[in-house]
Image (cartoon, rainbow, N blue to C red; front, side, top):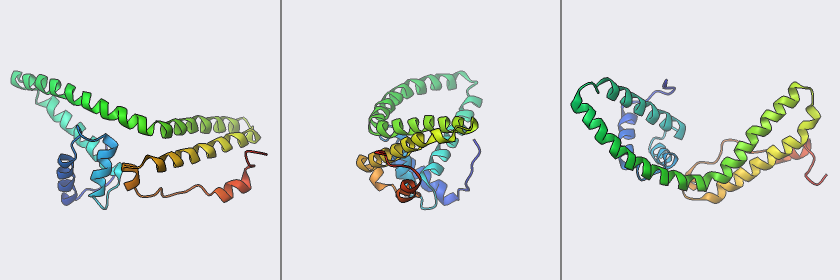
Length: 179
């Protein structure tokens, strides 16, 4: 994975300290990235997630190159047994996150389907059939936005979304649900 943003030595050190402060076995990946990114004023959650993923892939490559000796193989087996316990903890945390974010994920997945249908309609010159789909898209965005506001916890500490739905513009372009 190619790094998109430049990291200073200070930021790398802060990242390293923060990853130890917020261990993966106690935090969901998203929660961990949010907390770490809050300590790095010039980096966002995405930057942190990409850097952590890049570091883990780099570490895996190092382990593969050096795993030729039998002593390292034994250590790898021990690490695999440790990692199975770690993955068990992670899956429990992941399940909790899935329950919290399921409503948001559901409507966003639905919007992906809606966008694909809108694309198909446009390709086949069926533009008028997109009105109901656009209404559904708007409603799903509103549901997701409402669900994000009601989650609390980590979501409360996140900055507001950089873009908001201009409901006045939407109302002027699309008919209301009751029409």
